[in-house]
Amino acid sequence: MSEIAIQDMAASLKGRDFLGLVDYTPEEIRYLLDLAIDLKKKQKSGQPFQPLKGKTLGMIFEKSSTRTRVSFEVGMYQLGGHALFLSKNDLQLGRGETIWDTAQTMSRYLDGIMIRTYAHRTVIDLARGATVPVINGLTDRSHPCQALADYQTVLEQKGKLQGLKIAYIGDGNNMVHSLMMGAAKLGMHMAVASPEGYDPDPEVVKNSRENAALTGGSLLLTRDTREAIENADVVYTDVWASMGFESEQSAREIAFKNYQVNEEITSYAKKDYLFMHCLPAHRGEEVSEGVIDGPNSIIFDQAENRLHAQKAVMAALMS
Ligand code: CP
Ligand code: NVA
Image (cartoon, rainbow, N blue to C red; front, top):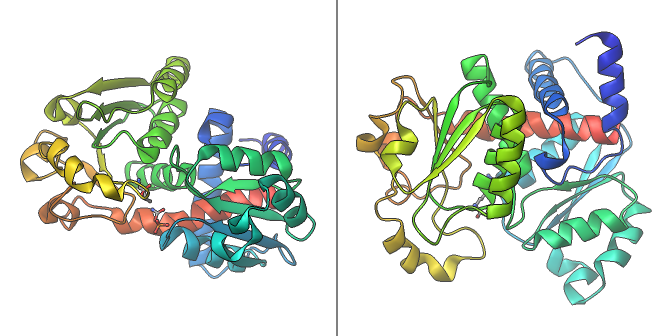
């Protein structure tokens, strides 16, 4: 990218929200991925990069988190700024203060807000009320920060994204929605195998397919795990019962019993396939121990890249 194109890109991202990859062009996503890789190099070589000196990110959590909380907090510190952990129950939001009033008030103190919540509507409403960038740190519908870090990880490992095949086996949840949209924007071929009743949202499927048609990518939905995994460069899975769906655990164990990623099914993927999982994982459920702890697994590179990818997002939006 030329210096002018980089400047134009930086200007177009400044002040934006990061609610979903759907709102970002393929070029913007590539820019964020390249920036993430660059910031990772800088961090590893001890070169300071602190464009957010004196700035504060508020982090609202309505659900548990290990990676998102720690990586945003550390990322903000490394960028020269500061992060505040705000549990929903400790905020007046937990006692009925409106999202609008919360967003307006917080915008008077903060330079950005990251939120992890249940209803996707809450993030949209927060962004509508806030005058500072809002970042989606996971909703029931999507998890774009994770998908961005994941595609950074694949790009680092394979040297490209365009044309690669990613297979996702499991629940049609927030994670697969963001992966589908990312794959479509990046010209990848994605195959999703889920049991009946656990398909991804048809609207996200339709939107992903429309985007894939523009980039040379594709999206296949199937019940057949072997069909999905055949010849895959990347094999991805996630928990059977996401946060908020714990009461369905035993019903889901039955529905998903033939959807485990294990040594048998991954034998149909490419020899040098990458195994990925956003974590936290349940060994022996969605993935066998041999696969998640085996030589093809890159789960901790993914986890690490949450830090670098989110630093790229914060630097781009909040500088
Ligand atoms: N992958 C992920 O978002 O992890 P946490 O729930 O620990 O933040
Ligand atoms: N689908 C999982 C992802 C956790 C990072 C959940 O929502 O619980």
